[in-house]
Length: 215
Image (cartoon, rainbow, N blue to C red; front, top):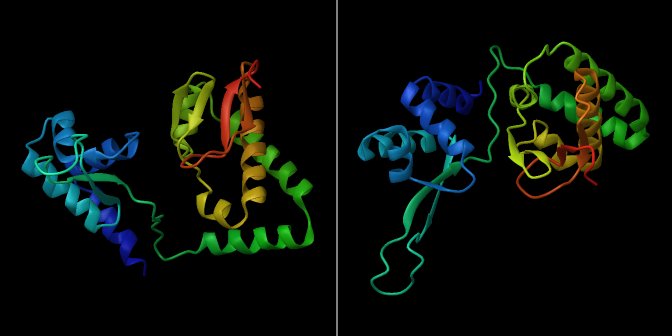
């Protein structure tokens, strides 16, 4: 039984906690208690209580640093700040271990060489998913699949990789799969002005969706 995931699900059942989690998760940097409280119209003590409960549930992490920009005596104590946890949590009842199956399959492809077949399958799956997505906007389509897109000058940057744990163990394999999946989806959706390309960077997906005229 995955007790950590059950605790996380229980924590997010509270609507205030869920709003706080979504706010912190969407933030580009660390978030203070006061900032979160003001953004959601909550009392600071209430926001602090729920933020700490989210930390206890493994959904948020705490960092401490001075935010005044000053150092030395009189500069104040380090502030308690929150960010989304790097842990991955999933809940299946009864328990399932799809991640293990994915690792075994990735290991087989990596060891015996079937990248071309994997990429072709990923492209086909992307086309299937894209064709069935209707006319929902592209950012919403990507958000529903866990990419967390944000606007950038050259298109959409993806703040999250849905295949993060697999990409850590098999980076070229997972990133290639991800790229072909998105290429197939964009093509099937008729997104003529957008293309998926590799642009790895720390803290986000290895793929970006950019304008066709971007290199």
